[in-house]
Length: 141
Image 1 (tube, helix red, strand yellow):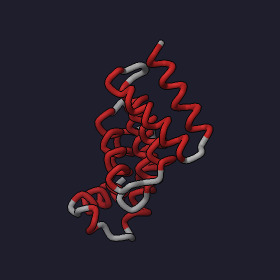
Image 2: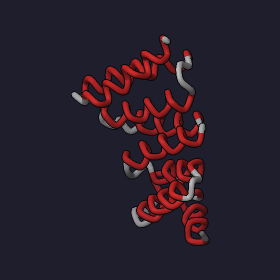
Image 3: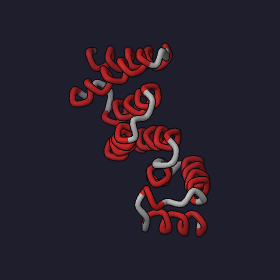
Image 4: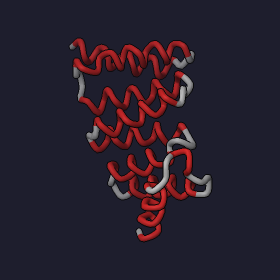
């Protein structure tokens, strides 16, 4: 929509530190609208723009990138979470999206699943640990 395009351009012209709090909900809404219309790449891009303010938006961006088959965007979301020292459960979720975006059993990201497992265990999140175990098993298969 026009409003989404306006928000996109306004946010893109700023650094994450300059992003005003008033734009974050608009970016989150634009990401949701793009996701619901099936444009997961655009949803991930909106989430990455807003993600500096909220970790949940970066996790959603990573999963949107995975749905779009965009390993690069999923990896960018994870890198932002790592730089912001997000809690282990949040980083584990994003790592799993990176693993899935790279493809099942991709050797180059096996270490991601291992780190996701370690972070899920550290966060005492059995569901995330199980998901990491599943990805590791797939990579071995």
